[in-house]
View 1 (cartoon, one colour):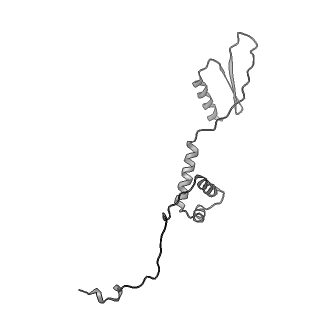
View 2 (tube, rainbow, N blue to C red):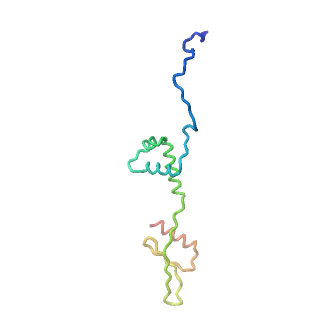
View 3 (cartoon, rainbow, N blue to C red):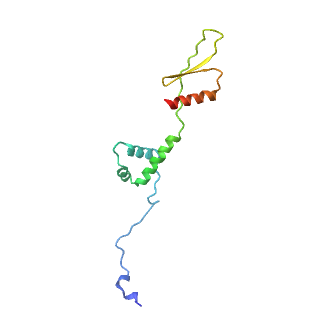
Length: 131
């Protein structure tokens, strides 16, 4: 059995260096604008994710996570709404059936005005997926 009280390795020595941590440590809150700017920078042609992460004090894994989250946000966002011009014209004969005519990406869709809106939506989706 050894006695550690005479062992020089167990003698107290004065502190050589003292670090004081203040604040919340390394956890930071990034604004949505900052995240978007850094993600856009990482998506530039020839950009190195590791180098960009290092430049901003991030880990590459954190930056990849932000990129994945940004992609998920884009795919889950509803498509932007837009308006199409509407032209109302008189038919040549009073007995003619009123028609709805829709032009979309070079294609023309004509349906009777009595067609259910759900049917028109389905036709437009089918037309959009083929173009």
